[in-house]
Length: 517
Image: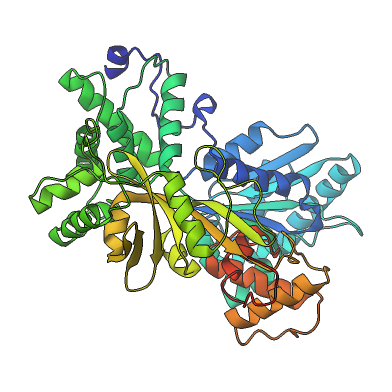
């Protein structure tokens, strides 16, 4: 049907896994690296945990891992973890081709046979890994049985590496007090987030290329609408993209735009599932209009006067025409960067395009990436955000609980949080400072003045922090605090104090007499 119309050799958006169509974003590459760590370095006995929302690609990454399995590795994959502890042992043994004849009724006999298999595999230089998908469905008793399997070991090596894949509920499950022994054995955690706007476009274009497309099948507004309505979740992108192309075929159009994507979303997504930020109401439209008229530092195209239609023009209209003949001054990245430097009192030039400088003053750092309004509020300082209302512009904002301060050319103005959300898809740049003597990464066992600064920040973040702030040693108590702080902040839980953690901590300790900034 629509495949022939668009000259496609295969269906590009099938939700069934096909290795040819796999697209790995930067965060998917990071997640896959964590899984490979569990396979190659997990012999220390820790679990590897990968979580993510439904449809973000966890199972696809698992298949990538298994397809690239080294010759010396053996894997047991459990896809249906709704099992009691005994059934779980049966499944593991069956996956590893361990005979359960005569042992089905006895956990001890099954574990003994599994232990003999693992010892033999170890003696042959083999690595054995247990991968449990949808692990949030494991019962507490089954999880405890999994933990006990890590007791199968030699004097120097754990015999079984374990990887848990699951939805965000898995993180909540492992925070239960009765599962703290298992949680403490997790040595690597990674939470897989949805695709950003540019990644959504790259994902769609990759699948279309593999399917044989020789020209773009979505226009710019269509790509933006795909991202808005799917929230960057690959499975929803597939559903909406296919439905949009079917609609384009039915209308005889060679490209799908925002209107067709919106129509597809109306047809296939429940109202309760539709992304909250794209539900229309008059107050939000008025907020978007206020942002468009007040943010004089950004190039915003005039919107039609009728408030309900303003939302459509700002969010899902087809690609706009030429810019106004006399645009409002400002709005490019260099201007926003210069303004941010003035606000922070630093001097540095960004790299070509819109990237952080290669070097800044000692102790001064630049981070860029994707964020939420909650993160910007946590940072509590001016940052650059990228906005789009048909063309990409940049502005400097500072987010608080009550609203957003827009640092426009003629001075700061207040706008609503929802107004910013309407035109911001999450990309930001942050300049932050720590003392020049704080290294980029601190880990358990380190000692020095940088550790003292971290402990002072920890005490400010959590007054009940119990470790001595006068001892310049990174001990177990500080690592425990770091893990909890990372967990509550949505950071990768590795117990290290790296750049992402330092960025959050940079507002928690004074910078006087530190030599930074």
